[in-house]
Length: 305
Length: 249
Image (cartoon, rainbow over all chains, first blue to last red; front, side, top):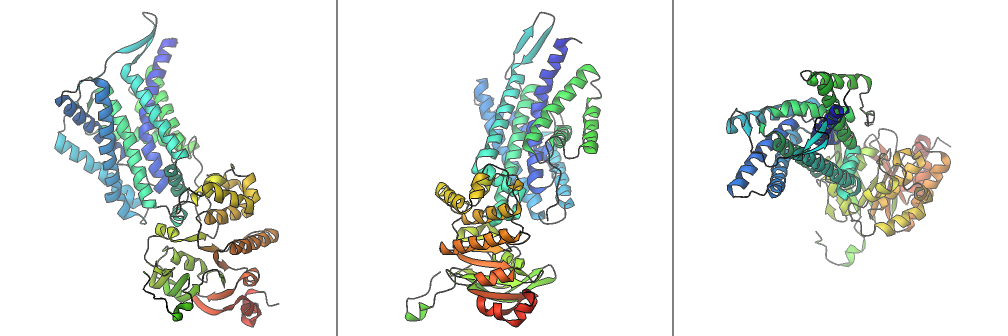
């Protein structure tokens, strides 16, 4: 086995895994706080890819050609608008169903997923869309024939993802908002009795999840350049797999699960077969559900009395 | 809110908590029937009753969860019957719920900080120091996950967390439930200390003996209705109470 192929697959896996981790955060936080799988989350990510393209087009229209500046503005705008999507979806589709059966919001989520896909398809067209390359260039390590390379965009993906995860971890662990999120997650009724506006906290969690997916959407769009209205499906299910692998409900679990899934998938593609990488990922999901249903860092669910 | 004018007739102070004729339902099941009671400032009032009498429901109705469908709940002259649950604590009421409901995955310290939501963290250091004085065990375990504490320690933590919001009125739901006799005695000592700090206490208990000895006044709840009321001493001597709640001796 050539070391450089292994190293290259690890680099690719880390990049892919950071993306999965960012999206998985939205699944795991929402599950943690209201116990539902937000199946529309993948499509929120898809919307953010379109918003990225629109933002870049608008900035180019204004004649802004500094790549770092354009990327920062695009990130900020996309995170904000995607956050508004997340907030609105919770308000419209989930909050009215709070207190009903567990199945109702799940079906509502599938409904929102279809609505988003069709709305984007109608308004933006069914054909794949693209953005111009803003950043090109690679870093290479090794000899002329045996080398590991990482594009600037890949470096950007890893750096921005880890920074976002670190910032979010700090918010949840050390700020008053983070404590209120954890309190609402652990015991929503008691949190309200202590004076926490739990509806506001749940909204905030949806906004955070959507904003994290938006970071992923911007980074992936900058990397691949093309996307369509259906990209949310497979990526969403993969990120969901990552969340389950790490232990759904656990924030560090989602990040770890995302990175591990990315690494596994890249190694499988590099050394076994590219066509079956999705099969491999989902087989992994099945195995996790059979042998460790609470995931790597999750705690077994205890029925609250 | 205060339409009162200062006349000698107002010398009788308005009760701090005033529950008037409330009915509360769980779906089709009526848990409370026309319950009225009041707690005046500085009093220790207890409510005793058997399992399923509606004691916990009554405390829930004060916090709007479940909400009373008939009647009213007033606090300090303000009608709070229809207020959202999270708006009750900032009015100056704190609850120590049945089963304690501490946050198990948070540290002892974080649990205390959660109590400060209604008042902000300005008094955090001062109040936390006071709580550690009242409950030295909590100081020893300040960085430990609350879920790893013993039952008695968790109860102390739940009481301390409630006090961190600097409430005027503290509601306690069976704080002695499931605890060893020695710990129960300590809990009632603490309640006395809290009362001496000028807090008003409304205590719901099955442990009628301890509760009636502590209380200035008491109510007996049977099947969702107030059956008896009087001073703690009177009820302690009442034959019906003795038979039903004190083991008849």
